[in-house]
Amino acid sequence: MMSERDMIPSEGRLDSEAVRTHLRAYFIMGSVNSRRPAAEVLAEAIAGGVTIFQFREKGAGALTGEAKISLARELQGICRAHGVPFIVNDDIELAIELDADGVHVGQDDESARVLRERLGSRKIIGVSAHTPEEVRQAIEDGADYLGIGPVYPTSSKDDARPVQGTVLIHNLRTEGIAIPMVGIGGITAENASPVLAAGADGVSVISAIAGADDPRVAAAAFARLAIR
Ligand SMILES: Cc1ncc(COP(=O)(O)OP(=O)(O)O)c(N)n1
Ligand SMILES: Cc1ncsc1CCOP(=O)(O)O
Ligand SMILES: [Mg+2]
Image 1: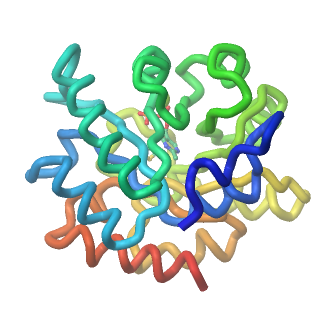
Image 2 (image 1 turned 90 degrees about the vertical axis):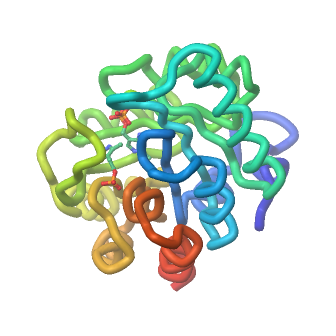
């Protein structure tokens, strides 16, 4: 697997082809997404082949303060040991404190422009986008990749936008927009193929791996799809 070092040219922005490669099997999780300890689930998901991880400590019962930082450090350690980039959802202060590999933000969060100013050129910045205008703005602001969705209905995000299928991904690629992107929302190994066929570089999932009886086997199914 490509290491974080491979993504970083001697100067300037990250190599977008390396970012694209890392997006193939994108696992997102916080402590509320699994009945089992997050560290166990993450280790198994990495053994199954996930290629990037986002720490998203959010929702009812989510950890805060020192407990959140401590879990983040533990999960980051597992990612580092396996060369898997560790991305923090929303919380730029946490990302800076941990020297995380990047941050993912949405339309209600800090802008990619501010993130880029604070994080510099060598961190991965992901932005959620739901419209062509949000896509254009994210690219202008310096995003490294986009998360597009929800593709399918999801029960992992209470305030999710309306389901949009694969139309936006397809249209962006048809227009020649080349930025790395993943689909998100209700994606399983069984319904992921149309997302990739529309032009996504990978799929990002919470429940299909975090809620699986065997996260390693579930992750392996996504990893297999990604290399087709
Ligand atoms: C890869 C990826 N894509 C989209 C999202 C959603 O981000 P956002 O809209 O900011 O919602 P929250 O995750 O913060 O609830 C994501 N996290 N990751
Ligand atoms: C964070 C997020 N953003 C859009 S849908 C979603 C939740 C994805 O979770 P799942 O893979 O369980 O549907
Ligand atoms: Mg957010």
